[in-house]
Image (tube, rainbow, N blue to C red):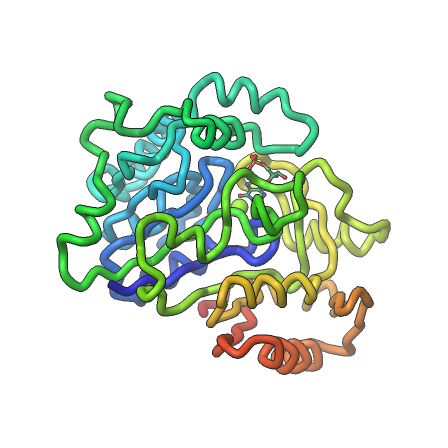
Length: 332
Ligand code: IMP
Ligand code: MG
């Protein structure tokens, strides 16, 4: 068994959807597995010129790859069927490719009602936190208990261990800065967003080949805490980068990239391939700044920032093999 992992290194919205979509196109994956979170995620994908925003359904469906909502996820039946229908209408045969691990947990109407009253964390109001709370409280509902999921359910052990040459692409949601343990608690999501979280779905550590860590050359965050410093430059970055939430439409707060937390995320997740997205945004804004050791460093131009980050990141982590700098429309 071989497994590659795609995960976010900041606060979600690092363009993991784009990376997963591109890896599906060029890899030999037999399965794409979403390993954490629920429909709080919003993965924006451009497929054959059309824009799609997926919340539950893994990007494998665009390339005819078996796509699984793993045991580490929570699933909202209403959102799940809505998404299947949208994809089918656009000609993507999602209903024949998607399955749900029978031990994934369910997001109920009550979970959503409860979450809709949150103002403390600034959640996406999709019922994510209450669903995970009930899972860990052992009062939750598993997917196998819902009649409407019949026909979509799989046993993850049977699915992954009864066939030869299984090659998995794990699709992460949210990011390291929102991780329940390593993020800025309580301003986090209720799941784990790490490489370890992918393994929790029933795959041995020896299977892991490449870990694709995805970040942006600047940072964004959506939620209740103050994140964006007082400076008009961040409003410009927000506009140029079109930084609006794919799930809630909220304006994303912006800041310069923090290399201290990026380094931590690269090390703790064993990132082998680092992607820094949205270079084109800072290129058109015309400023290149990065926090390092709590100090704001300014670079003269794109070449300088690239070479400095490259040498700094390679020095910080022995596992890191490749660093890609990518614009919105670039392929990796
Ligand atoms: P929850 O995951 O809906 O409970 O929200 C908890 C925090 O994570 C809030 O600050 C959300 O804005 C943030 N969050 C959850 N999912 C995403 C995502 O996919 N992208 C960006 N932020 C997210
Ligand atoms: Mg998103």
